[in-house]
Structure formats: structure tokens, C-alpha cells
Length: 136
Image (cartoon, rainbow, N blue to C red; front, side, top):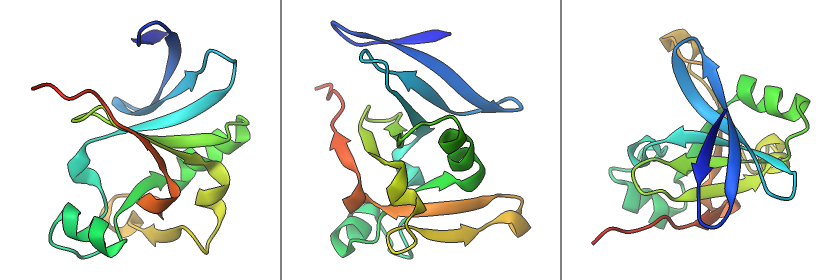
């Protein structure tokens, strides 16, 4: 197990992998609760056809995507909080599992024909965002 170091608290992280690829981690919080964070880069935000991420955010169509198999696995483990850790900026986007399960909030796109997987896309408005550290 690895630990993410954050002053003054420490978090236990159990990595979630498929083969050699690391998709995210199950983080055990200080109070005992667990959450799943997918590791993504900012460029991986789903823009819904918009040219830029800024345009997608302004239009309210910017989304984070999570794999349906991973969501099912996390739900089976009793994890109720899921989100995204943005590697580039250190930002954390966190939401409840039930938002991803609600078809009025999250849409499903199937990329299995292209070698991908079934994904659920949830707009940024359903996430709580904690900004990362900025280096000047």
C-alpha cells in the first residue's frame, strides 16, 4: 500500500489496476470511510463536442467519465464517494455514487467497438471541487 502525504493527515491508498494500467485508487479517509478516485489529466475531460474545455464548462457540458465496470466494482465494495484526481493540477472532484447511477444526471456512452469500454459521463456541476496547489 502507498500513502498520499498531506499535512497533517495521511491517507491509505489501494491502487485499482487492470493489467499494467493504473486507473485510480481506493482512499481510506481518517474517519474510516472510503472513496474511489480515478487518476486523470485535465485534457481527459469530456467536452461534448466543444472546441475547448473552457467552452464546454461555460456551456455546462463538460463531464468526467468513469468506467461502468469500475463503478459496479466500487458499489459492490460499499464505496459511496467517487471522483477524479487531476494529475496536472492536483484538483479533486468528488461526488456521490448515486449521481453516476441516476440516468437523468449521467449519460452512458459505449466505446467498446473502438476497443474502449462502457462509460458513464457526469457533468461537472454534480461534483464538489477541491483545488490543488498552485506553483508560481
